[in-house]
Each structure stands twice: as structure tokens, then as C-alpha cells.
Length: 335
Image 1 (spheres, rainbow, N blue to C red):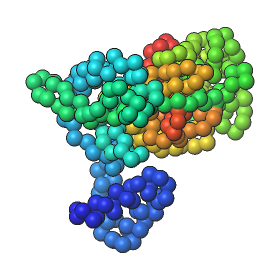
Image 2: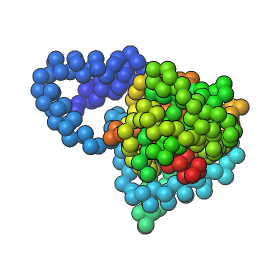
Image 3: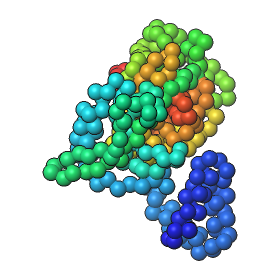
Image 4: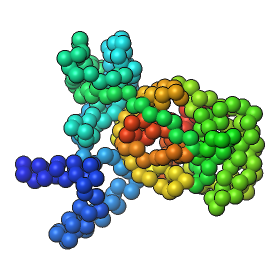
């Protein structure tokens, strides 16, 4: 690709990211201008059906095993978490000029980004780490702690267009099991013993027992209630799916967020991310999505990969991003 073509591609990606152009517009124009592109596109789509979508315009160059990545992350945390302004370190995508550019980067989370002149010691990259005798160079990106508000709002059955009400709080049904147990957001539940109502698609309200267990703290935001009758579980959920546990290298894959208003698509752009929800407290080890794709009442909405496997549940929005908690963490904590 020539330098001039590369420049046009980068400009187009920037325009798509900012909303000036839509991906559909670009694809339709490309197919009209180049009829041969249709065959190429069909071949690519057929090949990628069983593969995760990745943020298309980022670079990936780090060749490290999962255990190697853990060693690099441990070394980076040992170095940076000693600083008072640093609240976390995780794998993610490095942003340049407001756009995601480099996967396999280390994100250093700080409470507040300051101008270089106000910082006594700058956090500068790249980060050098030796793993099994080989030196690896990893890009660094300093990002501000996401802040915002939580959104009220075995095989596992993801929730489907169904809401949960506890008192005056409304959230989204996260998941259910054939045992009658249902899961939703801990900040909607608030306490054990409270009556739970499920609002099925179409508006029908049914009792769903009481809150049996809940947590709403720095690590877990989830609640378990029930029982919900088997025929009502079938109406409130999708078909059973497997839970997917993400590896640290899977910090830029495509996801689908299932809200009561329908399905929304996004990408993961950071794992193990912290967030500050103001009066609702801070959380750590969340999954951050590229962009804010949820609204008030979407707390608990399930997040699936493109193959339909369950990844996690929406906690809330912080700045311009939707924050998600891992599904396996919620299930393990509330057993």
C-alpha cells in the first residue's frame, strides 16, 4: 500500500470513529467501485465465522504465552503500583490521538492525568521485561480512572429483553439457571430478603422470590434470587450457553451487549480495568468496552462474544465507556 493510500485509510478510520462516516457507507461505496471486492469479502467472512472479531485498525505484535503475559503484568504492577497516583495496571489497547492504535499494551491507570510540567516523575514507555531469557518491549499508555454512575436499571441461560425490579430500583436480568436461580446487579438488589419482580417481554410482571445473596463492593456487583418457575425462565431467557473466561491476550475482541432495547455491538478495549462510580464506590478488575453502548436501566445486561458465549454483565458506564464484570466471577462469588 502506498503512503498516500495509507493516509486516506487512516483518515477514513478516524472519520468512522468520530461518526462522520459509517462503516456501511464505506463498504457499499467500495463494492460499487470494485466489483471484485465482493468475492474477497465473502471469502474473508466465511473464514472468520469461528473467529473473534478484533478491533480492525490496531496493531498487534507481541508474541507471548499466557504465562509470559502474567509475568510481564506482575513486573509492571510491581514497578508502577508503588506510585501514589496509580490505581491499577492491566493489558489493553493503547490510544493515540483519541483512537485505539496498539493492542498488547500495558495500561497504567491513574486517578487524574496531569500536564507533564506538574508531574514530578513521568510514566514513560515502552516497558522492558525479561521472560524466560528473552527481553520483550511492551508499549505503555497512561489512562485516567474511568468515572461515572452505575446504571440502575453449568449451562447458563442469558437474560433476554427482561427487566428486574427490587423496590424502586430497576435493572436487567443477567442470567438464570434451570434450578430457578436468577442473577442480576447487586446495586439493584441492595440487601438479602427483599422481594424480586421480573418484568417479562410484553410487560407481564411475575414474582421471582427473594434476594438470597448479593454483593456490591470493589470486586463483585451481583445478586442471586429465586425461585423463578421453569416456564417463566424459558420466557425470560435465551437458550443455554457456555461461559467464556477471557485470557489477557483477548483484550480487543468483539462483543454483543443484550439490552432490553435490543442487541448492541462493541469491542473490548481493556481488561482488569478499575472504575470510579462516585457515591456507588470504586470497582477493580472490570472489562471496559470501546464506547458507551448502554443506558440507564441496562445494569446486569449480558455481554456475549460473537459465538454466543457468555463473557459478563454490564455494571454501568464510566466516562465514555460501558464497564462489564466477568460472569464467572459473579457466579463463583454468589454460589
